[in-house]
Amino acid sequence: MAEALRVGIAGLGTVGASVARVLRDKAAELTRQCGRDILVTAVSARDQKRDRGVDLSSAKWFDDPVKMAQTAEIDVFVELIGGDEGPARSSVKAALETGRHVVTANKALLAKHGVALAEIAEKKGVLLNYEAAVAGGIPVIKTMREAMAGNSVTRVFGILNGTCNYILTRMEAEGISFDACLKDAQRLGYAEADPTFDIEGHDTAHKLSILTSLAFGTRIAANDIYMEGISNITQADIRAAADLGYRIKLLGVAQRTESGIEQRVHPTMVPTASVIAQVHGVTNAVAIETDILGELLLSGPGAGGNATASAVIGDIADIAKSRPGFQHGPVFGRPAKELKPYKKAQMRSHAGGYFIRLTVHDRIGVFAAIAKRMADNDISLESIVQHAVNGEAAAQKTVILVTHETTEAAVRKAVDGITKDGHLTDKPQVIRIERAG
Image 1 (cartoon, rainbow, N blue to C red):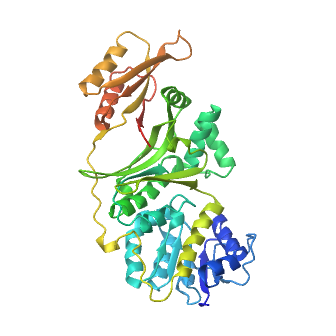
Image 2: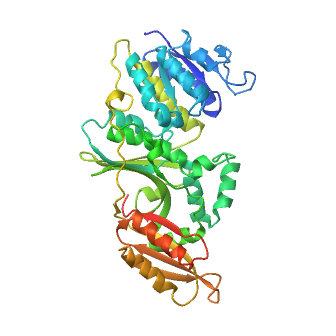
Image 3: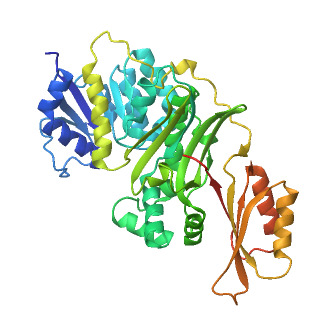
């Protein structure tokens, strides 16, 4: 049997402790699968005395994760610290430069420094594995990096944040407000005390930028993503979507166009009969569209200690199965030095149209003014419906417009014009509609 694979874990929170526990509890099974033992020989965290529910007394303790990354006592450095700078970046960089394999769940780090770290890994001939960084326990990285040889990807999209999907699912199922759902999500541990990173789309954008690089062979461009969160989704939007035969999901979408690569994160209306609409709660789903395979949908647990730990352990097992002299594949599916500069696509027509909700003064001339703004921007309307607000005698109405194919620029310009006309009593809502998916 080959020598044991020695693992150092930096970060012993929920995921780190779970990884250590599974490596201990499943030791015999992992040895049979990998042909060698996997041992946790070093650990690093902020508090050595904290009870983590797993015996780590046999592992050497390091206060400094960088020193652990450089020690000769480990073969694999597992980074579960988090953050795109500081100890996470410096320790991962140190491990790679020292010739250690790295496993990380850190999407923020990869979104910002992934290409540079990949260049170091490929130069040193070591692995940089990151299955847990995108969609938790779903093996989407392995699928795109290893199982789709010969396929050209045209589009990748999905539900990449369990917190947002949980909130939208409960808003629809129980008819409660965004704020009430968010508070419950925080109480249950699905959302952080400061949920901004999740609910405003940043987490989804980081994950999408990694998938974009894998899909299209471009350098990661997390800062070039159009991004909207879900904090302005109301029960009025949820009900209107249901009436029209749609369900609202926060999607990350990346696709190749004639002018470049389009990346966007935003609330989207998808048909209730579509597969993606059936993904509920904290579950994630990723759809990959290719020329040979067609459309592949991967769905499963997207967050939580066990789901993330499962992905981390899968990455460690892959390293354990490799042998000296084995030529490792490139980190992002292509050699890092050959990744093309990211070219942002020009704004184009959106085949699914748009849902526009306007709360307006109930007075003569408002409908005509709205119609004129739409016509002035060459927007064709599929339907227009009005509802009274707080009863028929109210001084305002809700107007719901559904457009045919048009551009983002045209819709935004028309809505800005309506706002400037002084007809609105509340902030307008604009949501893309996806006809399929």
